[in-house]
Image (cartoon, rainbow, N blue to C red; front, side, top):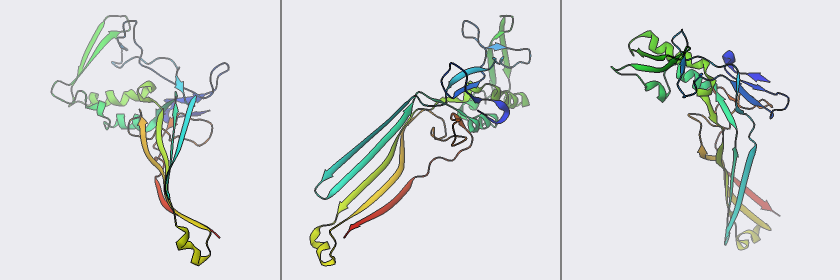
Amino acid sequence: MTSSVGGWAGIYNDIGRPYGIIKGYRMVKDESGNRVYASSGYEKRSDLVELGNGVAPLTMGLTNTFHYRRYTLDVLIDGKFGNKVFSVMNTYANRFGLLKNTLNGRGDEGLTLTGVDESGNAYEKNISYTTDAFRLYYDNQKNYSELFTYDGGFVKLRQIIFSYDIPARILDPFRIKSASVSFVARNVAILYKNTEGFDPEVSITNGNAQGLESFALPRTRNLGFNLLVKF
């Protein structure tokens, strides 16, 4: 349905599988969980595999209205669960050394890689932080889509409306039946998320191919006032 920059991940529809599966690549590991290193010195890349569903199978919404005398408070909370999202932005951030995990090895001890080679023998290699190989190692991680595929579930405080009904004694001289003034806030806050550095609700497209993020701006928080008058 669509593909990320570099073909690192894509959204697929396969017969017999859920709609909108994210496919990409993993680091190959042996039965003991050790990383398998190729002759290039980098972790061996898997074939194209499923990394999760880009479409959330579970959605929720909860709205509450509270009244106290002339005051009313409406609160809307919503969320989605069970989906994944691949981040192009974090893939680039990792390549440029901007993610926290790229701090690993930035010291005199350098970065030590351990695992097994393709024959199953023990493998160990140290990369000094002062060499170009250090930068190239993190740049090469763009080939492992799983590293930048996150749980896309979230809970948001979507909307707050705080209203006040103006007393009738104030409105009668103006022949107004009723009036209220409200403070309205939308996209107020993200209460829960598992993504790193980006809004899990953003997408590379507003179409059907959901599950890819690519430098998208988060949803804008809107604040305003409403005046409702009935004659």
